[in-house]
Image 1 (cartoon, rainbow, N blue to C red):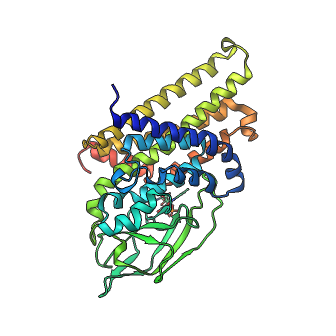
Image 2: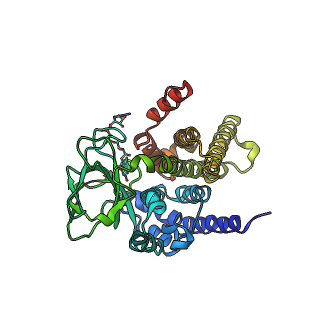
Image 3: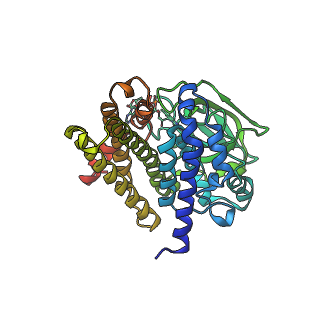
Length: 377
Ligand SMILES: Cc1cc2nc3c(=O)[nH]c(=O)nc-3n(C[C@H](O)[C@H](O)[C@H](O)COP(=O)(O)OP(=O)(O)OC[C@H]3O[C@@H](n4cnc5c(N)ncnc54)[C@H](O)[C@@H]3O)c2cc1C
């Protein structure tokens, strides 16, 4: 029997699917071709409360657990990976503060986000430094503000469009400790510039540009404590891995659906479909469902408070590899039409390659998992 909570989750996922199929999917090809930001799809999500998907009901959000959240991301990515990635980055940006917000931050950030008035981006990674190696400084002055120095972020999704940014920086050049902030684009003392344009190989609607943050962040933008990233990280990292996995699983799922459409459109009866093609479909189905099962299990364990970081890492790598594998098979079975860009397959294939590049990188994650298996992590 379903509980009230699970009925609510089912509705949240179903409504997301409706938005994905009626708004995101029809716009996906145009967003890919033009490289335009997916404003319309994201607005529809905001108007329906999804910008506050993970924010508690007490603070105006939908109060979804991680399992519901990854299923929503999956549905969106199945229709338009670019929109889903912008949306996932928004949820990632607000993930630390949704747990740690002060009374003032609940009113300044959480309620407006849940009301669809503030959209967020993640300003974390820095060029040429590898994951987690941060040079940006935010040094507190006597009035409590944090003065920004050398704060260049290499890729920030939604760079021209987000209202707020989750930014990480060091509070002292001599420390490796990292501090987390929420920075508004328009505050009197901040100078935020977007330094590039986005013309990506895939995820073409993402507006993932380099940015410079200068001036100061008011004390009210501090998330948690100074140097407190080490306490935030263990709670945040499973969300990061599994929300990426949701996007990659959605891409795989969208490509699989396309594969079936192509094949059924080519043969009038299923028995006419060549054996090799049926085997490719069967193998893809096995991979897809195994990946889905791993992701849902990892998310359910996080929700149950028994999070297994290695399972989350494995799920992210598996989802990325599944997206790469299934989009490749979809291209193979789609044949000349797929290669000639007459179907969405090549778009899914290009979008899937973002997973190879984006932190957490698969190679590093596998290395960490291998080391953990040997008890050396
Ligand atoms: C579509 C897209 C959207 C993105 N959105 C965001 C965002 O919203 N916010 C954000 O903060 N970042 C974002 N990124 C950045 C992303 O997560 C990576 O940090 C970035 O793509 C790495 O590229 P780089 O050229 O700066 O990497 P570099 O650090 O210059 O590394 C280049 C390559 O060298 C290798 N390498 C270097 N150092 C290491 C290491 N320590 N371990 C393993 N391999 C290493 C890797 O193969 C890496 O791909 C986005 C990237 C893309 C492609």
